Image (cartoon, rainbow, N blue to C red):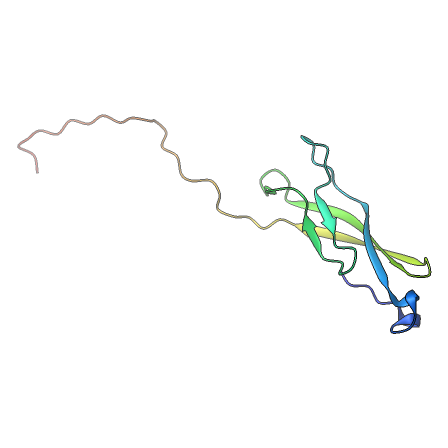
Length: 105
Protein backbone atom coordinates (compact mmCIF):
# COMPACT_ATOMS: atom_id res chain seq x y z
CA UNK A 1 0.00 0.00 0.00
CA UNK A 2 1.10 3.53 -0.57
CA UNK A 3 -0.30 6.70 0.97
CA UNK A 4 0.50 10.29 0.00
CA UNK A 5 0.24 13.31 2.28
CA UNK A 6 -0.64 15.97 -0.31
CA UNK A 7 -0.22 19.01 1.93
CA UNK A 8 3.18 17.89 3.29
CA UNK A 9 4.60 15.84 0.40
CA UNK A 10 8.26 16.79 0.90
CA UNK A 11 8.31 19.04 3.95
CA UNK A 12 9.04 18.50 7.64
CA UNK A 13 8.27 15.53 9.85
CA UNK A 14 4.63 15.70 8.79
CA UNK A 15 5.67 14.24 5.42
CA UNK A 16 6.81 10.99 7.09
CA UNK A 17 4.08 8.34 6.87
CA UNK A 18 3.95 5.36 9.22
CA UNK A 19 1.81 2.32 8.35
CA UNK A 20 0.09 -0.07 10.76
CA UNK A 21 -2.69 -2.66 10.75
CA UNK A 22 -5.88 -1.58 12.50
CA UNK A 23 -7.88 -4.74 11.78
CA UNK A 24 -6.00 -7.99 11.15
CA UNK A 25 -7.09 -11.59 10.71
CA UNK A 26 -6.16 -13.97 13.53
CA UNK A 27 -5.06 -17.54 12.87
CA UNK A 28 -7.40 -19.85 14.80
CA UNK A 29 -4.88 -22.49 15.89
CA UNK A 30 -2.22 -20.14 17.27
CA UNK A 31 -4.11 -16.92 17.98
CA UNK A 32 -1.43 -15.00 16.04
CA UNK A 33 -2.10 -12.30 13.43
CA UNK A 34 -1.84 -13.59 9.85
CA UNK A 35 -0.50 -10.40 8.24
CA UNK A 36 2.04 -7.69 9.03
CA UNK A 37 2.80 -4.37 7.37
CA UNK A 38 6.20 -2.71 7.09
CA UNK A 39 5.79 0.54 9.04
CA UNK A 40 7.96 2.52 6.61
CA UNK A 41 7.12 1.11 3.17
CA UNK A 42 3.53 -0.12 3.61
CA UNK A 43 4.43 -3.54 2.17
CA UNK A 44 2.05 -6.21 3.48
CA UNK A 45 3.44 -9.70 4.20
CA UNK A 46 2.22 -12.90 5.79
CA UNK A 47 3.30 -13.20 9.42
CA UNK A 48 2.72 -16.95 9.47
CA UNK A 49 3.65 -19.75 7.13
CA UNK A 50 1.53 -21.13 4.43
CA UNK A 51 -1.90 -19.81 3.58
CA UNK A 52 -4.23 -22.40 2.04
CA UNK A 53 -6.75 -21.29 -0.59
CA UNK A 54 -8.86 -24.40 -0.03
CA UNK A 55 -9.42 -23.33 3.59
CA UNK A 56 -9.66 -19.53 3.16
CA UNK A 57 -9.65 -18.02 -0.35
CA UNK A 58 -9.48 -14.36 0.72
CA UNK A 59 -8.86 -12.03 3.65
CA UNK A 60 -9.84 -8.45 4.52
CA UNK A 61 -7.53 -6.27 6.60
CA UNK A 62 -7.61 -2.57 7.46
CA UNK A 63 -4.43 -0.49 7.14
CA UNK A 64 -3.75 2.89 8.76
CA UNK A 65 -1.36 5.50 7.35
CA UNK A 66 -0.42 8.21 9.86
CA UNK A 67 1.68 11.29 9.17
CA UNK A 68 4.11 12.94 11.57
CA UNK A 69 1.43 15.37 12.71
CA UNK A 70 -0.88 12.60 13.91
CA UNK A 71 -3.38 12.79 11.03
CA UNK A 72 -4.37 9.43 9.64
CA UNK A 73 -6.19 7.74 6.80
CA UNK A 74 -7.40 4.16 6.54
CA UNK A 75 -7.76 1.73 3.68
CA UNK A 76 -9.23 -1.74 3.39
CA UNK A 77 -7.20 -4.41 1.61
CA UNK A 78 -8.72 -7.53 0.03
CA UNK A 79 -6.05 -10.23 -0.14
CA UNK A 80 -6.94 -13.08 -2.49
CA UNK A 81 -4.91 -16.27 -2.16
CA UNK A 82 -3.78 -17.75 -5.49
CA UNK A 83 -4.32 -21.48 -5.85
CA UNK A 84 -1.25 -23.68 -6.13
CA UNK A 85 -1.35 -27.32 -7.18
CA UNK A 86 -0.38 -28.60 -3.73
CA UNK A 87 -2.32 -31.86 -3.58
CA UNK A 88 -0.82 -34.80 -5.49
CA UNK A 89 -3.03 -37.48 -7.07
CA UNK A 90 -3.78 -40.47 -4.82
CA UNK A 91 -4.49 -44.06 -5.67
CA UNK A 92 -7.72 -45.43 -4.22
CA UNK A 93 -5.78 -48.39 -2.74
CA UNK A 94 -2.23 -48.79 -1.43
CA UNK A 95 -1.65 -52.13 -3.18
CA UNK A 96 -2.90 -53.66 -6.40
CA UNK A 97 -2.76 -57.28 -7.51
CA UNK A 98 -2.80 -58.60 -11.05
CA UNK A 99 -2.10 -61.97 -12.66
CA UNK A 100 -0.67 -62.30 -16.14
CA UNK A 101 -0.39 -65.63 -17.90
CA UNK A 102 3.18 -66.24 -19.10
CA UNK A 103 1.89 -66.98 -22.58
CA UNK A 104 0.13 -63.59 -22.88
CA UNK A 105 1.67 -60.74 -24.77
